[in-house]
Amino acid sequence: IIDTSHQCQIQSFKHVVMPPIVQVPALLFCKAYIDTMHMPPSYSYKYIVQAQNSLTSIGRTLGQFIFEEILCHWGELKKIVTNNEMAFIVALDWIADYCYI
Image 1: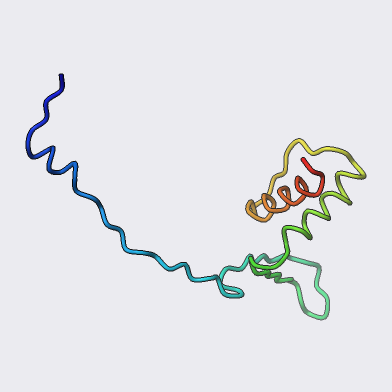
Image 2 (image 1 turned 135 degrees about the horizontal axis):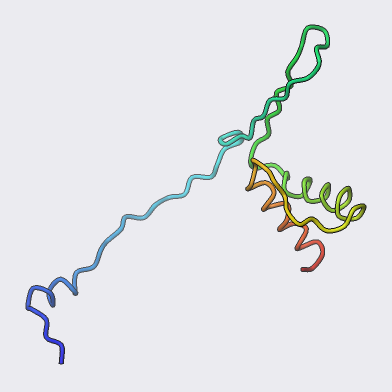
């Protein structure tokens, strides 16, 4: 038999009330993936800056590239090393849906 104190019994009936949270949709370029690349000089330019927003169809595009240019030509990959993990997770999810995996 387990006995609890009166105070514990009262506290067990208290409910935590959390206010509703309204999710605001992300705006275009609210989050962007930006990268720079050093290139050989051309017309006094040496760098390429590439930016993409997180709301475009990058997962599908990247998934198509991985599927068509890597998997279909070279076979399976054991490991993907990247600094843009989320884009590749979305791309691999697209490949899984595309191949009915």
